[in-house]
Length: 291
Picture (cartoon, rainbow, N blue to C red):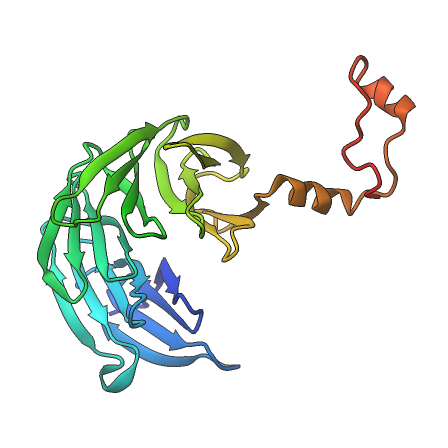
């Protein structure tokens, strides 16, 4: 069969106790990482082609593996069924991305521009569907679970009310600003901010403003093809990863970022230096007292 390699698809469980990855030959590998050494708990073929996406199911710690052509398999990692496929289905079209809600609602986007809503406990049944009008490359459920954010090939982020998965509805205005395809979108842990990864190498951050959202930061990664963004558990750090394999970390709280930068300053700028560099600008050294 030749040498099998990772596709780059991988995930950590919500509690950080398990890790999983997919391979080019359609295998899913998973490990228990709660101890000082990783213990492999699964190694099985779940798709006839490459596994392009791996997601953990929050409710029981099982893993969903997505094959390039539409195969979906759920693999148990705990109990008597650990290391076995407990459910599987074959979608009609290749999968682009997916997201799973805490209660097991699964959203899967295919290459026809449709999003299918499934129940992880019965993968063969489609509960509802969404047609945004463009290919969906990123999705995330709001922490409250009632909204699904999708990032699209038309360079926008759109929102859907999925409180009733059988009748999803578009809500709110689309988020705009980026000028390249958005590969990923993620809610902050408190649901008050939203980050989107643009293929041009920028991460856009939006913040709730009344009933809508406002762009507050555009973070330049210096990376080609920013693939994904993720928030730290407390929402203070945003991570961005690119095809190059490099990762950027940003402090998203302005005061915290200023404190971090100023902690490395040896001496504060003097008023004479300020006037020489910024003539006509009021003297207001950002790191005053922080050196």
